[in-house]
Image (cartoon, rainbow, N blue to C red; front, side, top):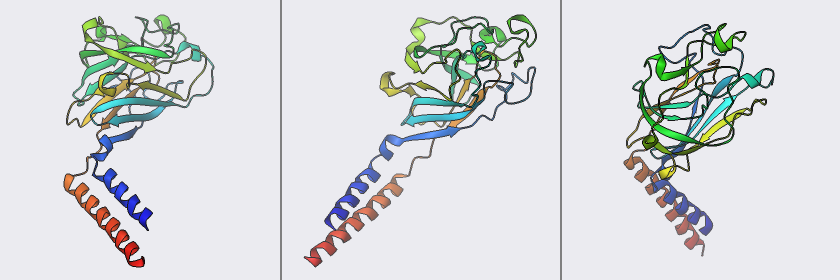
Length: 260
């Protein structure tokens, strides 16, 4: 019985902690066919051929984003080599203005010969770019049947990267991306922000939501998803839970001493 009481006291201690720094995972799907204001282009379906991004997970600790994961279900390697990942965009608060981007693109024009980003560290930058800013601010997916994408079925006329000048003073650190092998589809792509100052991207005190935007150079499958903060338990609720656990621990101790 003593071990039971000790266990309950330990559980109580964890319960009274500030929700273990409020660490949790938010699962998101792939509900958008294109970014608002940028569709439908040449095709109004979720996935135009390959790849097939089905959603993923956002890892949050306190007010920091520590990791983003994206699931991809295409397994065939046929013409996979024409794909390359675009830049990752983040919009704090969902106000239709991009606030951060991870620079994965080493190309200025989208096309089937774009070299994909390998595994490694990439720069995170602060920007102030309206979602529906002029196309000249973005690297665009092009138009199906013309230009470098001639002969490929793509979702044309969609942003896939940032075309503006990268201002070094706006560099916020390095982000690890697990890479996009040129000939091998992977089922998981992820960005790890834990090496940034504070252990992740600062979403701001009291944040409630943010939006992520990501797609390949052909924009064949577009991610535009809102991540909503998990509710934080009320202090009174946590105290009530802690009191109850303390009471159970005390009851266990009382029964133990009676038996003695």
